[in-house]
Image (cartoon, rainbow, N blue to C red; front, side):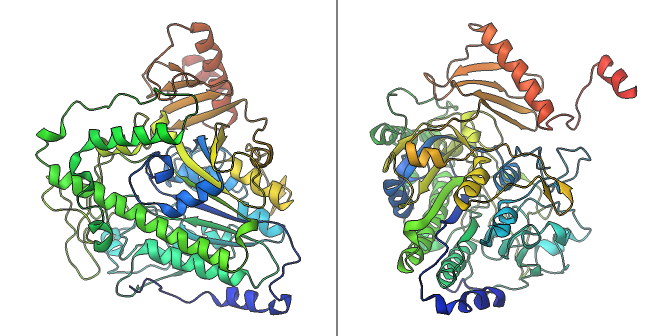
Amino acid sequence: MNSKAFLLPAALMIAGNSVANAKGKKTDKRPNILVILADDLGYSDLGCYGSEIHTPNLDKLAQQGVRFNHFYNASRSCPTRASLLTGLYQHQAGIGRMTFDDNLPGYRGTLSRNAVTIAEVLKESGYTTSMIGKWHVAETPLRKDQREWLAHHVYHDTYSDLCHYPVNRGFDSHYGTIYGVVDYFDPFSLVEGEVPVKEVPEGYYITQALSDRAAEEVTEYAKDDKPFFMYLAYTAPHWPLHALPEDIEKYKDTYKVGWEAIRNARYERQKQLGIFPGMDDFLSERQFKDRWEDNVHAEWDARAMAVHAAMIDRMDRGIGQVVDALEKTGQLDNTLILFLSDNGCSNENCQNYSPGENDRPDMTRKGEKMVYPHNKEVLPGPQTTYASLGARWANVANTPFRFWKAKSYEGGICTPMIAHWPKGIKKNVGGMTSEIGHVMDIMATCIDMAGATYPTKYKGNDITPMEGKSLLPVFKTGHREGHDYLGFEHFNERAFLSKDGWKLVRPDENAKWELYNLNEDRSEQYNLADKYPGKMSEMVNAYEAWAKRCMVEPYPGQKRNKNSVKRMEE
């Protein structure tokens, strides 16, 4: 298979070769940093978190590193990426919802100029900075010929304002996509730096192409005296369900036993693995009452999950390539690798969305129709199909939790997270930590490791103070003084987690607040709101203060009482 569309950028080749006299020994001893982000990966979708999916490379990183069981994202792609890249809550970074401008400070649809990216900070500190993969933090206005553009039948020079591209937000290079959703075999919005990639070679598959590029780049970086920061953001396993036939074949029979059997097996493995130490009853009730035996679409549904597994399997093999390149060049021991997901597995049925709109093509480059199988009439996997898992398999993928992507329950916001750094991780090696963390902590961790300085001003703009806290103490001692609380909000889905393990959830604008004690009820099965009204009141007040401070408010469509309207008029 030929997934390599390009040689490395000339600037990268020159940078690497210009330091040939370093003879492979770097004088700058600061660690390299590799952040790997999966897309819509479920909490239990890795072997080391209970899955039947073959992920030996990530499992090995976990065995030699540390896994987090209490690590959080922002419940959806672009908000999580904004928070991860800036060390802020997503609203402070400008992307409280999606990449469209709602003309409110926390909802501008692109990274704020009052925020800096990890790449901008580390570049100033002497790091080489690279991004490979999905960006999805730039406003992407739709065009009149969007349908034809998605199918590569017309071309435009830019997918968003160039000032918002990765190479203009601190990254020395970028090979990947600007938009959020792609055809895996012929991706829309693929760029090399600022330049659109108009064609890809026969046999192209984006997961493999991203892995190939990453392995090539880290090999080149070994020739340079500077440490590197690489952000490798896969599109897998986000819909559409596109996978290589040989990868699907591996799982063709695995899921014929159905939803409940797979979910229960994952739960049993999680108990054996000690995912939640000291807990032996943490599986939430399955959210659906239907039985696999009565499923008239069993063949289609089993195939869908097989494709999902195949996408993850291919990503894991690609990560293995990158790790192998690091090891062969003597860089692995002093490279921090962080692996996590941007949100829980998705419950969406994208086959019911409108074809040819936003970022969803309805035909291939050759003009072949892409089938959106509303009635599950065509099996998923090939380029000419466009489908997703749906809620029942998402409930399995996110075992042991309830719910999924875009929700503020644990199934939406709690991610598997693996940290691997042989030279630096000294506690819980091969084990699990229950220390609470958040994607915004990655910025602080990078700064701590690089000895860099977070700026108060950058390129003439005042910079919002960093919210994240370094994970380095967890690596060194097994513990840190974490956040007093963590706040969550996305499309009126709200949650608030205190450092003592109590969590508020409000699933929509008109719902009542719910209260859970995650210390005893990790999967949010028992709402204690009526039992502990004092705790409820205390945490609701803290949430409201957080929402005002961190630019959640004002939000689109917010209802205001008469007093607040009067104050605004004054």
